[in-house]
Length: 251
Image 1 (cartoon, rainbow, N blue to C red):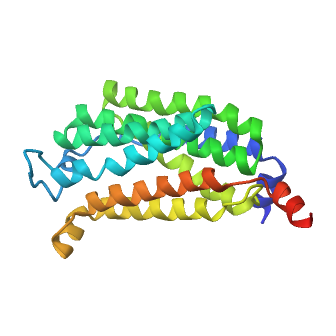
Image 2 (image 1 turned 60 degrees about the horizontal axis):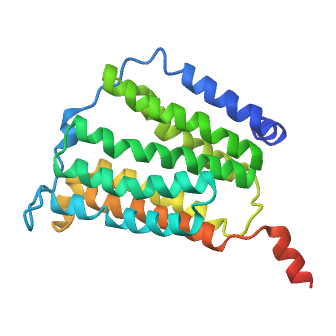
């Protein structure tokens, strides 16, 4: 396809152009306000004195994955941001679910924006251009953090929605059009699929809880998203340059 050829021939200009176009496209869209029904989760049971128990404790896998990632990959800026974001997501989300409201939701969303920025940067670095991926991390982090500050100042979530969904869209596009340069590529596909499942479970929180009666869709969303993070952790643990593997195989 023509678009695919353009992306492959000039990937970095296309990516920045895509960013600018999608950001400008937000302008005519009416302000996106936080729906207060969002805080009314299906499972609000209290156990051991902890309100919304399962939505709180289901964040523990984020902390575990993030801690392991930080211990193993903290010397690289991109992986430090990525696994630091995952680690802090566990605490931020648990804090939010103890008392769900807009103020605590800010601390849930803030570390997630770090993860989104770092994941896209990692994919660009791995599939497109190493230097471009490293450079992209800074503007993505700036936009993500600013999007949440803008939400607190104006109650408008448009830019935060972009900061969440643009990296996922760009990630799928890059994975589809650019061949891997490292082993472990299926882990990216697994992570994307698990994240999509997590968003689906989040949307059907009440329906899932009514159907299975044990855990809610939102609790399962945490577990699916943590599984996606684990898939990314495994990717970094096992990946090797394909050129190195090819040389070793010939030898």
